[in-house]
Structure formats: C-alpha cells, structure tokens
Amino acid sequence: MLVGFDTDLAGEVTRLTNRIQSLLGQIHPALDRVLGPRLQQTVALKLLRRYGGPTGLSKLSRRQLSAVVTKQAHRNRAQLVEAIEKALREQTVVVPGTAGVEAVIPKLVETLSGLLAQRAEAATRREEILSAHPLGKVLTSMPGIGVRTAATIPVEVGDIGRFPTSGHLASYAGLPPVTRQSGSSIRCEHRSHGGNKALKRALFLSSFADPASRASYQRKRSEGKPHNAALVCLSRRRIDVLHAMLRRSQPYQHRRSTSIAA
Image (tube, rainbow, N blue to C red; front, side, top):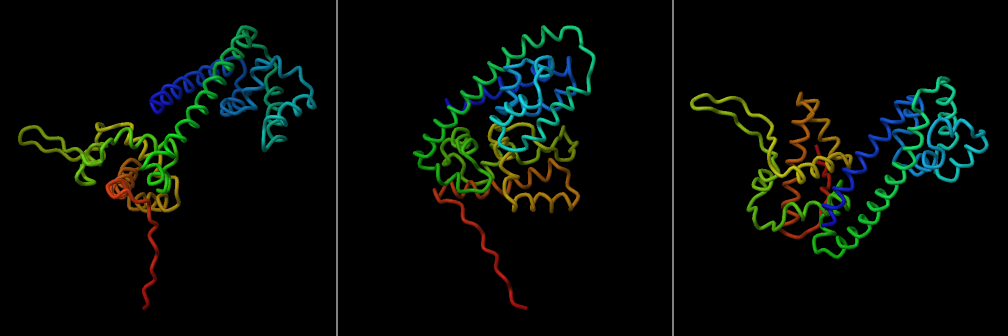
C-alpha cells in the first residue's frame, strides 16, 4: 500500500512540477532555467511561494535575496543568488498575463510542498516497515538497492519459490529478448516490452549506483552494444545475484579480487 501510494504521489509531484515550470517559462524563461530544475528544493519552493515570480523577486535587494537563500540553501548560496539576479536582469519586458501567473504559482507551489511532505512521511514509514521485514537487510545489502527499491522488490516478486531459477525471475521481469516469427519466417530478437514493468524499472534504476556496475556497463558499451542492450545485460547479471540472495535469505557478498602469480 505504501509503495503504491508513493507511486501515485510521485506522479502528482511530476505533474505539478511540469505545470509550474511551464507557467514560469511562459512569463520568464531565464528565471525558469534557474529555479525550474530546483523546484523540489526548499529554497526554490520558498522563493516562489512567498514572492510568486519575477515581479516579486525583482523588488528584493541583494541583501534581502541573500538572506532568504541563506536560510534555505545548504550550499552554493552565492552562486544561486548571482544566477537569480542575472536571470532577472536578462528580461526587461513584462509578458501579458504575468500577474495572473504569479497569482497561480504560489498556490501550485503550496500543493507541491504538501505532496513532497507526504512523500517524506511515507518514506519514513516505509523504512520502518522494511527494517522489520525478514528480507529488508538482505535486499539493502546489495549495492544500488536503497529503501525504495528494496520495498518495491518484495511487492512485485512475492514468493520467491514461484521462480525455480533466476531465468524464470528474469522472464517475469521482461529482461530476455523476444524472437519475432510468423509461420516459417523468423526475424531477429528484439528487446521485450512486456514483463513486470515496476520490477524492471527497479532493476534499471539500481544498476548505476555502484562503481562495479558502471564499469560493467562501460565494458558492454565499448564492445559496441547500445545503451538499452548494455542495461539489460547488467540487469540480467544482477537478477542472478538477487535470486540467490532471496532464495537463501543471505546478504550480498562482495567478490574478492584474487591475484594470480605469474
């Protein structure tokens, strides 16, 4: 229930973030380039909620703007203040409808802040449940698997006994390629678009979180494989390890490098 609730919240957060960026980009593209990527950070939410947009921000002195940014931003405070002031100087024309947009943005930001707070609360609750789960420590011991991914895997996999081998689990996730054929005509293999998409997404997102996985991905790319094929190969190797961990209820064990004497 918590994983599904967080997924719904994530969709709403994305929708609202895109809506705010769209409105801000219509009236002041330069300011959107600065605050748009930071819309889920406290400093951007505070500025837009209190001052609405470029009109309200342009009335602040450098000292006032620095005071607000310093209270919310943990790093790069001076660079952010400079970027905001530069963006405000970049556009001197007031676009028609700016006042209406600046009246709507604070309301949207307020809703977005509430959704982010709900996600944080759900994440705390999910972490508490996962820590008490028998497989919680087993899953999080694997590099790249955090609390959110570790909570998704048991939900999507269920009873690991349903999958006798790692190949069955990989097929359930939609990782093996699919051969297209019609009658006597057999075409080449293609990447599968089926399977459990939530499980596949969790495997993909966890694939780049540790240096060993990134190195393996780069090796596949250097061999000439495209991005998707290299990602599938990496996820397929990880699902072998994941299947063994779940079947034996054993944490991840780092492979020790051995040197062979000449």
